[in-house]
Length: 536
Ligand SMILES: [Zn+2]
Ligand SMILES: [Zn+2]
Image (cartoon, rainbow, N blue to C red; front, side):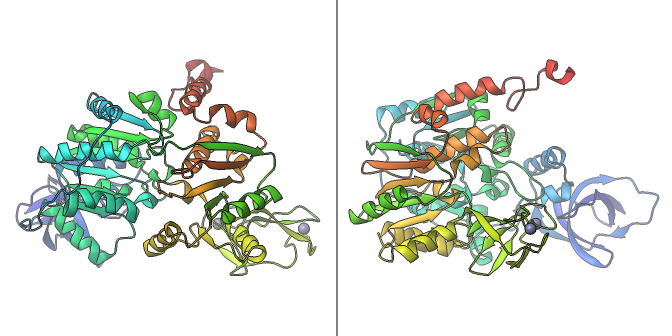
């Protein structure tokens, strides 16, 4: 009899010991039972017969994790504090069935780079991890694609990470136009049957470019030649459930493990990447258009100036976008008599008002209640809502300006990939005049005819008690502004009392990064806390 320590997939338990009458290779997936339940587990190592009674392994599957996957999982378990079984469960194992490639690769278009893009391309090959710090519209994607061509020519594959929401049909078309069948797009909204097809292409080797959201890190690829993390500053790279890994950091670890180059790309790189890695500054947009910034000193409010700007844009047959950091109708419900804020009984955070469903909802745990008619603390009936949300802004324009066609772009309205596709298609076909949305607006989409960007509530971001608040607020402003004026000159209207902070950094993000570095040295990441600080 042989004895094995196994990791139970998706279980917080530590390694358990099982027995089998034959020898089993390490890292194979097996079936075991635990308290009459059948579970999948991974053979970690062979061990001595323990003093306690052991159960037999039920069966052996054809699935197997690679030694690199296991190493990465061990790192995740250690660094992000979870069991090995939980970490391994993130990965898709290799399949030992033999598969042969059926699809043919085709390249259609030709990528021609400018001299600056060529310079960037050669810069990115000099260090194991480098940062492509390129303005929106400056042609980062073409540089990536040229590099992909080279990697594929060497017989290797590419892992191309993007924030989930940037995995748009636009990007897919762009990649497929050039690389045809060799492209696989992997994200959480891919259906089970689609996943099976995509995995088959990964197993048989015909998928050369594996583009995906953070979960693509865990696909079974062992002949990797390059990793690209686009929009590397994006917060959605941090997993929001256990294990809470950071996909950008894991990509860097993975690059080391596979000895391949990692390229990080962004128009507003994170300070940590800017400090840690060499960067190439790719300036200017191809579009050569101009952006005019104006500031209105107020909190999130649809003022006459905002309305005018939107009405004028519509009159010219152009498109506008309006950013608000909050979804729902209002962020808080407050009693005007005692000041009580209605908050979630489980999370102690203010609950948001959703008029459509007549409910107040917690955006952390999804707990919801009917909108109360009186204050739950003092019984007074003067309840007021504050902090405008996207749904309320949509209503505002629909009620007052019925001829303006409004689209809502947030997690409430865009719950599926189909809805995302539909909305982007309608907006690009100019069937929508005004797109109102949250952070989602700022993520890597190409809108060609937006000539007005209105940004509300930026001060909420700036005033958050987070050492990254300045970085987040400024990067948000630049990312949203970057969505406008891609073909024509555009107007960017920003509501903020902090013009003095924002204005000097517009078009000079590197100046901000250099100034901000000084604030962080010795106190905040990416720097270590100074010993002086620990002692005092
Ligand atoms: Zn009250
Ligand atoms: Zn809650």
